[in-house]
Image (cartoon, helix red, strand yellow):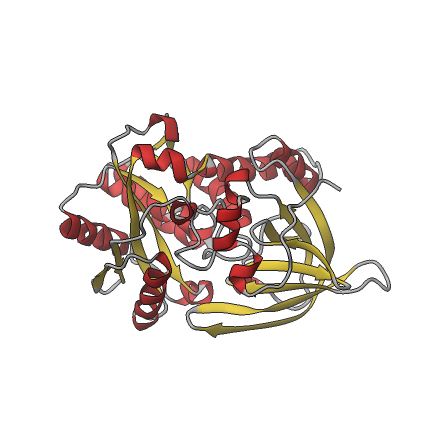
Length: 362
């Protein structure tokens, strides 16, 4: 067991933004809420999956909605507590441990804030290993944990509890509620015991995010190439492979809000003269990168657009014309590459016709 302290938040935010693959909400906003909670209540225990008792009541949680809306509709800090209280009233069970349903973006921070205020541990794992745009796109769902009951709340104290046997239907209902709640809401779902959490979760993702941030910080302090440092770091993790797949300038960007998602395409003009542009399709997160008809990387593998100078991830909502960027791809762990997993969050789940081929080192 270790603790998450205020001193971890900067590294965690940087790492979670890279795991967010452009989406998941800006972790720097979530960091403000987490910092306030830690200042008020003290550090939060971080448990590995092996440290969670078999019978402990675990609940996953996070924010839901379009990342672009989060910039204008800042959280008040009590939304997640409202959802937790509703989940407990509905089930008659007491939550004993908290886990992010996605480790990427703002949702790395949401569990810390509610856990600090409740005196609960956070589990060092999640259900996405990155960020995905839909609630059913979870290893929890892939391997048999029901999404419901799902409690969803907003900053005004409005709260609803969803009961349906289908995780996809829970997503559809929750998405409609999120739109009615102003495009941003907070969700408690995928209740399970500790034994189930070990079976269905992507392990180590919170500490992974901290490690990513620390790697970048130390590389820049030592004046080493931060992207090379990231590639080397991922090679030593259960993700196993990362690669720079392109670099250039943002030449065009189309982005719009559709059914509670930020969708669009970004065109990156490579620095090499005469090279074909790199096109990245977006649905909250970066889904596929193509160049000259060739797929460079595709979901579920991570595609993160990094600032050329700082190597920090640029969230979808902060992409701008003229930005100079690197494009980093990272292969997901084996638990996310099984046929069952690809059926839920592989290319076909997003309407893409590309076959999934895991990122290779060359």
